[in-house]
Image 1 (cartoon, rainbow, N blue to C red):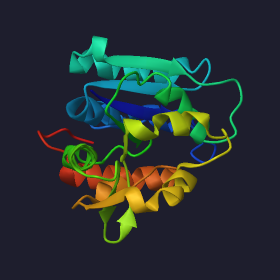
Image 2: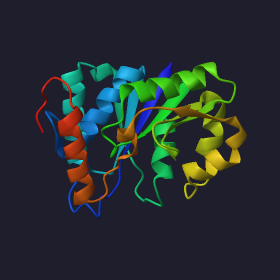
Image 3: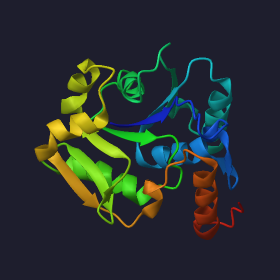
Image 4: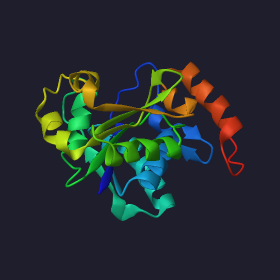
Length: 210
């Protein structure tokens, strides 16, 4: 069993709007992440903010369009937010008996399916149990983690970070080379969104106009 945990509970203060529901082609930012997750994993857990009905609606639309309602669970975040890691923990608690978990930030919509598959397979087939994709010496997402680490992650402080976890287990990390600049393009500002749209316009298949 493989599970995608999609982190979709951020405040997006610098964007000035709910960045996860911004349109890209015929979908939305979070919708594209859901698509890749469902093409890669058996199920997906999407962690949203408390009472974030706008993001929930966008996720539900993506799920309907993918025809995979029984493979997606929407989890509401906790009533306080010390950082992204608490959303990771909320997602892991719903991962069940997964052999591998892939952690997807909800604001990186252009990551390739091939990248997620390569990371998943590196965890399934490698000895270390953790995989990180790399493009031009830059680490990206999703991060793949074996089930052997999930209890440890759930028991860490909610103020911790994934970086701290990776540093503590760096000897177990497989770096997976990929040809995927899109996995490095997160969206924090309107300028970031414009850059994502420009790249999407040049790379989206099937004439999905942006």
